[in-house]
Length: 198
Ligand SMILES: [Zn+2]
Image (cartoon, rainbow, N blue to C red):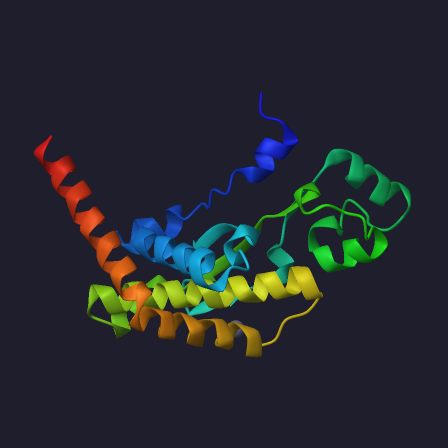
């Protein structure tokens, strides 16, 4: 039996859709996560539960209409009881708005489980080198995650913040990120060889 607090601490992201299209997509997710934790430090990816594929159009999409959240049951009941939210609009209300109603709210009482989309095939078509593809997928994940982070924490989002995150990521990739990517790719090769030889 997992307690609510323990449940909130599991940070698994469902990336199965993009993994099934590109067998190195998981490296991009790890790269984005490392940048997020080591350099950016806003925990952008903590808001994300699903990285889905985007079949056409832009490199990535974040649509707040797909937002979902998990709220501590007691808190959810009182929010609904006092008429601040309805079970219908609960998922779409930014964390920032709930905090206005309940300033004493703790971060571990709400978990955002938002979805972002990445156009994996467009990136694979436009870039031929695996390292370039992985970097572009990671940059797109960070861009869309910044949209989700801003919407949840400030109630709104624009292009400025996500572009800034992408730019900082590209700078990081010139230094520590470069080594991180090489390490992740080496691990991936070892794993692949182990699987083949067994
Ligand atoms: Zn954007």
